[in-house]
Length: 284
Length: 194
Image 1 (cartoon, chains in turn red, purple):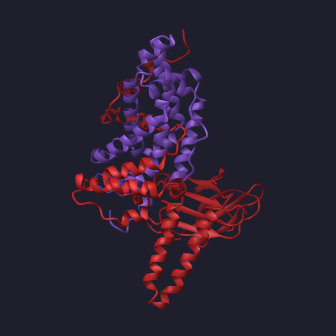
Image 2: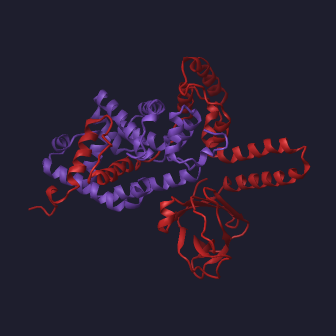
Image 3: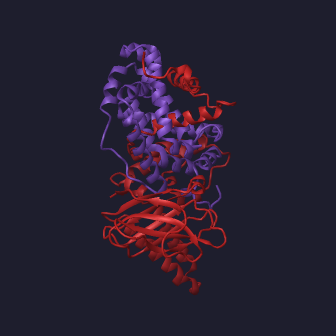
């Protein structure tokens, strides 16, 4: 007798077999399963998706995107979120023949114009460049309104410094994962960028829910040995992305943690860990 | 989409909804988020860069044309895109009738062509991909083999049994055990998608 369990012992066997059958037939899977097996089916379906996502990613040649956007009536500039939102959407929802008439020559021209230029690198920096472009444009708009100029110039300088830091050689990143159940539900997450000098850092966090009254989030750098060092407290607005940065980081920092503390912060972590990251990887 | 919406931070389902409304910019961002993974998937199935790139473009054209049919209650966007791409790649594979050649391609999976993260979401997608590969690698080889033959080559369990010489019941059991182990070890990742 085999030590392996028989399929009849497990109610999920039918779900798995059905999914595998559908996978072998090709075409679209029947993703609508109701009843008691619906949740199990959905979990295995997502697992199938994860298996597909387990491959080593390959950077597509820029020309594929150019052709795709030409086909649907977009432009190469649609790669940039900032440009996307400023671009009028063709009326009638779907582009038609009219759009394709100009889109294909335009795409061809753009492809030639972009020859030799690294679309790969451009995409990587799109977000930061979009911020700089927006601020530059805004700066021009407010030049006449003197009181705002200094503030916008300051924001622009910060954005430029930040881009220089996070795109600099030797920069390391550390992903912060949600620890508390509420943070997991809200899909909270963050990424810490640390410059090659291991001093300057920039942290961006998404999905944190606003603190309840009397509480605040507190950021901690955790050294290999010794007590966590506070990097300050912060709160968030609903749906607002948090961005924190500084020019100093404690030596021998090995992890970063966000905890929920009483308003004003604590001397040492007392509340539950909301986000935590301790795996560092270099990206450039 | 309204002008003041930050597409970069837009959740995947909302992005698909925007694509369904004809927003080419949303399609571009969806492409940025998933094209590396989907091209890797198509290449893994087809073992040929040129075919894989065609499949990638076809898959996103299908997304453009059928985004309105996407139902977030049925699957995550990531899984929806994987299934679209896989389905097209398997169809292409069958039409070529070169499964033996592809087997070689599967075994010689392209390495060193990784992408660098393009943003916060990309960091997590890449990190998740690494973790998924780790978990796949931890499966017993005989279980991983049947799962990969089913998923990446579109083989039925009977075909797997015929190809490997393993009894059909054993193939089914190994498939089930592999799926169950992955479901357990990837519990957090699955819940993030639900």
